[in-house]
Length: 448
Image (spheres, rainbow, N blue to C red):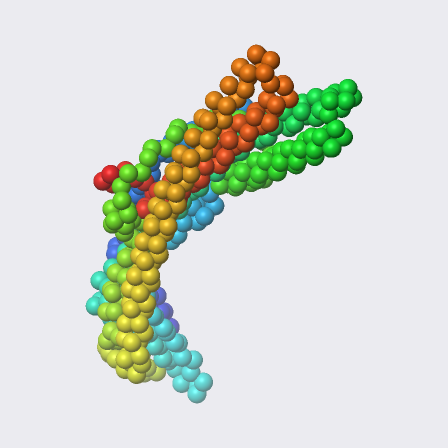
């Protein structure tokens, strides 16, 4: 009879434990939010697309047999950028942390089963469950803080997309420019070689000195050296483009389709400042950080209260349920509040510094863009004048008024003028794209 009684008690204890476990599991799963971050990732992509001057077409693929357009390069880069994929992974993590934050604190269940050593019958049983209750009144702040960390992750990923697109557009433009510079350098080598051959022929018939031959030789060597420099810079530009696309290890040879000309910037600095503050995603990220720190003030020193329920059975089979409660006295509460306030102040000051840096960057790039436009205008005037000079020289040569050798330096001056114009155009494009990025990624929506 005593055996059946002990067996019944053991079954009761087992059923009690199972009931506690199942109830806790149902409570946890019922309160948790979804951990699916698909919509959050899409929000980052949509946020970035609103700040991009171009559309990202994920259906575009890179085939080296076809000329590389900037649209294809951007699509490839966005899908292969490691840091962007990392930022997407952080979004998934932050969404899971929100679901975790919405859950109640993990309950603690402990138990002990005594073994009699004095020869008497019976054995004690102790079951104890403890639940922290502080999560009840800190739950809104913890959820709000977690949502701000998710918002920061979304903004960071969107900012990364903007950065990748801007970098690809710039490096793509650089490669297209370097291609033309290499071609002009080759033409200059050809002209220098022709000048040397003509000078040698004149030297043979006594119409040119040995010094003139030496000067022509030096000029040819210098032009070849310049060609090597341009080829080296072209190779670096291609590597930078491949790196921006996420495949610096690629050795594929490809042609490039030049981008459309960039429009002129007509708005003044004040408009650019205001637009940058409203549209820069890094500043929006810091504003979300300030909100997070503000919310965390309520989590710095909350009341720490816990509840407990104990089931106790003694040696004489007497049973008792002992409800209880506990309060933790936070001796470091004031220090925790001071730490939280300091973190909020740090975030605010960091944001102020970032805004000042944004204003400086906008002013600097706007002035650089304006100066590059002026230099381009001057070099375009030089180019037009050089073209006219070459045309008049050709007409004079056809009339027999000039030696054909005199045409070569003018042709080389024309090549040099074209190269300077290309450099100016690259400076204009670089300043334009960097200024575009500095104000948030696009000039769309700005009052010009």
